Image (cartoon, rainbow, N blue to C red; front, side):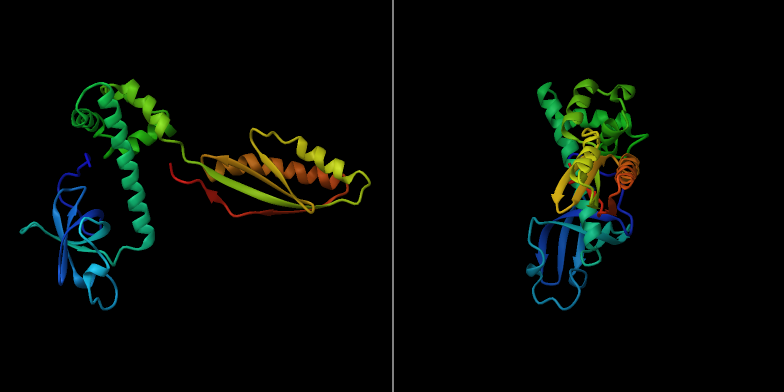
Length: 261
């Protein structure tokens, strides 16, 4: 990992660690983002009685811990594994994945231009340090906010932006709804088809599920934007179908977040 935090971890901070040594009553682990070493007492490994620490950790395993206490006078760090819940672990692991992706982008550009990865990484961090604490947030802003690295006078800014936009995709969410439609008109099927045919396929996906059931869905960068796309279309469909004498029931289905990039 190229990225290193300066100073010492704060109490309550989540840290990614690599297990370095396992003793009968404790575990030692390196804090990857700091380069320092902390200790996990057996009582902080897992709730309940532990007969064998090796059932929970193994050497070289990556684990997410929370900092219990930093003893400044001794440089000693107490860690806990059991006090990290699944959501916290998931979020920290996802952040580390994004950090590793950012570092691989830097490495790719550095290799392509025959310079040292460490030198390019240091140049980036030096230039963005006043606005960003790590390359993850900076690179995400390149993708999502149109940030230009040229504004920071970063080496190989153009090449970096090109690879960043290739490898980091904007966040995306999906919302969808389901129609139940009944029409007793002689040409009811044709009416329904014509209504759904008017939908812009570049914005809305409509699928006939059978038995008078239709699904519509859309994707956007956030739920608010997705709602603003879907709701007018939904309302227009209901208005047209009811005007044609059809019975319409609409249900919003659960929101879906796209898989992380």
